[in-house]
Each structure stands twice: as C-alpha cells, then as structure tokens.
Length: 253
Image 1 (cartoon, helix red, strand yellow):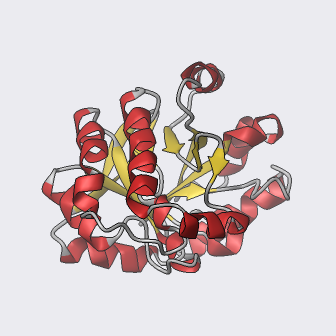
Image 2 (tube, rainbow, N blue to C red; image 1 turned 180 degrees about the vertical axis):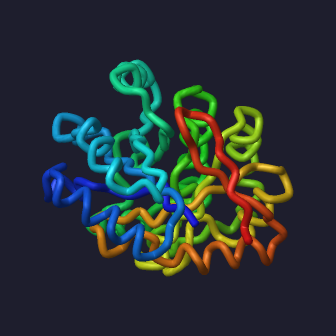
C-alpha cells in the first residue's frame, strides 16, 4: 500500500541526511509499501534537503518515493505558501490546519481549552478554515480532516452538517482526503476522519489516500493495512498516490 504523510525531520529533532532517509525507506520496504511520501512541516523549510531524498531513492527502485510538503494553512497567508511551492517540483502538497485564529489547538497544553469552549462553535470555526484551505487552490490533499476532535470533545450538531461546506469544497476542487492513522495514538483514539465521515466522503466520490503521520522511521506504514480494510468495508475500491501533482490510482486489493 502507500503512506503519503511521513516526516523525515520529525519535529526538527533530526537531520535530513542519508542515514535518516534510508531508515524511512527501509521501513517502507519492510512493510511492502508501494509508495512513500515525505511531507515535512513547512516551518522547517530551511532544514529540508529534497535533492538528497531523490538521490537516496535511486537505491530503492521497488519503491515510489514522493516528495511533498505539509503546509500550515492560515487565512490570508496563501502568498507565503505559494512562494514555497514555487521553489521545488513537489509531487503532492498537504494542507493542514493546526491553528484557529492563532490558537494552536492540538498540543497537549491546550486540551483544557477544548473543555472550556462550546463544542459546536469549536468545530464550526475549524471547518471554516478547512473550507478556505480547500478553496485556496494550493493543495492536493487535506490532512487529518477532523483533527479538531483530537482530545475527544464532540459536538452536539451532526458532524456531517458541520463538515458539509468543507466536504463540498474538497469535492469541487478535486482534492484528496487522507485516512490518517495517527489519531489512534492521540487522546481521541481513532483514525482521522471518523468512520461516519469516511462513509460520507465515499458517497460524494472524493478520493482517499493513506498517511501514518510518522515522525520517526519506526512508525512508517503503521495501521495502513487496517485502514485499507476499513475503506474496503465501506465500498472504496481504490486510493490515490501522486506523481508531479497528478493522481496515481492504487486498487485496494
């Protein structure tokens, strides 16, 4: 299968050197992945080494090694992201939202604020930013679509209602949504997005991809097989990877 959300630099706690690149590609090979996509956070831009990834990838002809970027979407900062994307011929670009009006909501220190805020407003504010990201024209993929649930706070309004405009924008702009398995290892303890959203995404004909959100080599491909089985159970027959921003289809055998 494929894993199109791995972080070579982690949280900037290692270098983009040959040894570390090999560790990720060795794990991908061990798990028999067909495609792996490096997508470090854009705020570590100066530490990235895309040409070296391409060079090391030549030693892994059995593995499609893609280079992407996980760009933090903030309204009115589209120009900043566009400038980064002009610097390298990326295969894919993940648009992610970890902030609402400057509030970084997914770090452990902010869990208490999730309990203090009104849940429906919290979700509405989050999906409003997701909608704007989808309409920006900057991304191939929206990362961890319902990340706002990270600490297990749930809205009283139907999630399909709260996410409707964002899903409509994703579909209209031909974007891909990932099944991000890392949510299982957060307080919410489930994949992003939740199964009810997955079923709605399938109903709307939106493409899926997979991502472990690995911040170390040992986590590459984690739970991807289970995610594949889950998508098959809801009627999905293929997922997509990327090459030079074009979609590449993979059947869910």
